Length: 426
Image 1 (cartoon, one colour):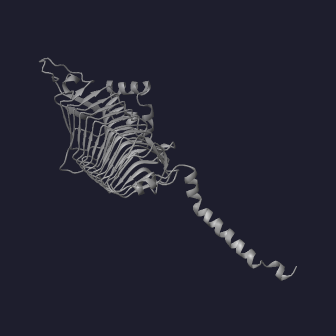
Image 2 (spheres, one colour):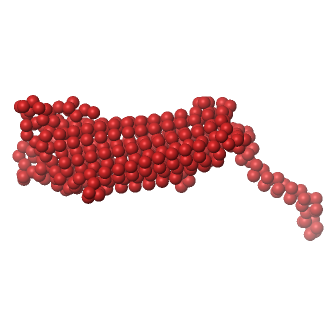
Image 3 (cartoon, helix red, strand yellow):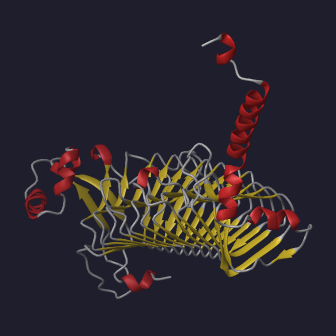
């Protein structure tokens, strides 16, 4: 075959060029064509709306992701679904004064680095309420966002192992927000990091890891929440000035299960909470950290747990008054066999108190004293804690109290123990 036969003519070269252009164009248009064949674009509705419009989309399913950069009210009336198709966040909210309500936001991407969420909030004075967020890695992510309201949303993560789920609600350098009345199921954590002056109230979180985790977050309020069947209830790390009041925390079990945990945290008020059926009710690690501050724990019910209160070490500065200790296997422990008596214990109810009230003033005639015995196996051998509460260890503990091999250490003394749990009910 001649060289000329091997070469394409002008017409053939033009046809090949046209074919390559068409293939490239098809690749560029393929996402759009798929979108057209699937769900209509919600972004188109947002782009067509004017500033401060009220947008009530027709019922149906729309395609995301969606970027909102203007003030709008978007009301799905419970009949609008936005599906991100497994790419990115469902909604990127980069504006102030936006209201999102009555929407179902689903099928975000799965990138932890990009914080793929139902809603990423990067604005102020927004209201996000009455939405359903499901199959989204993270639920609602607030980054440097202030004065937002997150209310009555139902949030769940992707159906993956708990450690690789995203957080239901995440605050990062975000101030003066109100997170209230949300229902959270099977997400990982709710985290409040480097954020202050937020209200977290009346939320219901179950099936997660940390119901609520503070990190370097000051002056937040945690009121009337229901945290059940999570690995940890509330944990505070380096987070001062927090108020925790009237919360219900139950069934925080497992090797690290605890109702409320403190690490190097000061000036915290823990009042009138119910902490039930936890591995450890309250855990204190070098708290308060500020030597001039206190933590105040008053009026709480700490009941039916493995350990009522656990101190990591011999520390001081906590004031514990008018709490009720009922049905715990061990009321108070201190790591290293030390004492918790450098803290203030006053007018608590102890269900294992063995004194009398002859003058009928509601206060025991002699102090409540709790002793620790040096040879308690489960305190000295961490692996033995698995058997804590078993008949064998309970018999050993009884024998240690009956005939100790050495003088026991006093863990605490409450000079005015109350005779009735009802006397300290809120």
